[in-house]
Length: 315
Ligand SMILES: Nc1ncnc2c1ncn2[C@@H]1O[C@H](COP(=O)(O)OP(=O)(O)OP(=O)(O)O)[C@@H](O)[C@H]1O
Image (cartoon, rainbow, N blue to C red; front, side, top):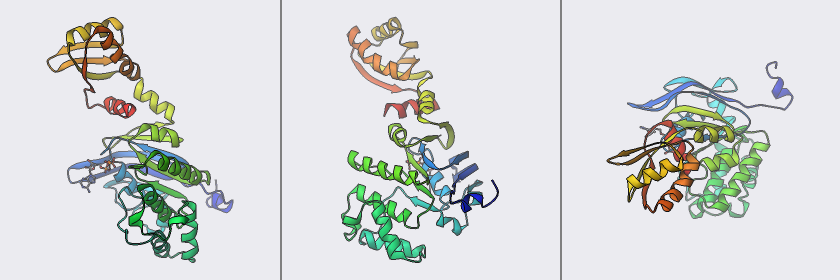
């Protein structure tokens, strides 16, 4: 497509691209050589706590410099380039520190920071988008967790950016607030925006994201739609440590049942290699009950990518 053609047709496609991006804090490597490309629609950034999701999101938003590699928005580097803030909205994980302001004062201040030509109208529009009109004149300090999340969304949307980055937006929300926010994110995406949100819960990502990027221990571990990710997580052997009232008897029952590839008796308990994670965790309590053995503990026993994946699936 010739340069500028998309914009002229009004059919802008916003793409965030990471090219071999790393970030370290002293000796800690938070993000390690990540390359990916995020386009229109909803992308879920999935990974356990400490995987490097917040660090990645802050680099994508232009708030943190990569130690190496580049992040670009439609080909333009986002670091040290204030112009890109016009095209990006970032909702950080932590609570905002403006509890004394009303929702409307906060959003209006953001509209003015962006130097929007009609800040009042823009603030009203953003507040309407997140359906917070009814509480706009109340102090943010009195908002519920869900309301705070929505007003943060409004602050990121006030300048109508084509790309939106949300760091753990569902944390601490009750199911109703969660549904409301999912609905809002879907609507934002339906308007053609490029939306990335992070989460450590597979089900959350599955319900909302058309595309998933998995990050584990700072590295890009997998990408695809939720079927592919779930298959990657489940279709591989998983190691478990199982402790019970009678490990020897339970080992015999597991072997007889055929639900594991191998069973080893160790002084810490049984080391079991399951073929199918979900089938094994479903079958084990039944096998134990039929053998008359009480289960004390079942836990993934290695720190490999697989066990992290299986941990995510088990949530
Ligand atoms: N400012 C910092 N200084 C030192 N280490 C940091 C800093 N920020 C993050 N880290 C480390 O970098 C790694 C990645 O952290 P990050 O917050 O990006 O992960 P995360 O996936 O967002 O996790 P969480 O969901 O728990 O916030 C962690 O080991 C963390 O301790």
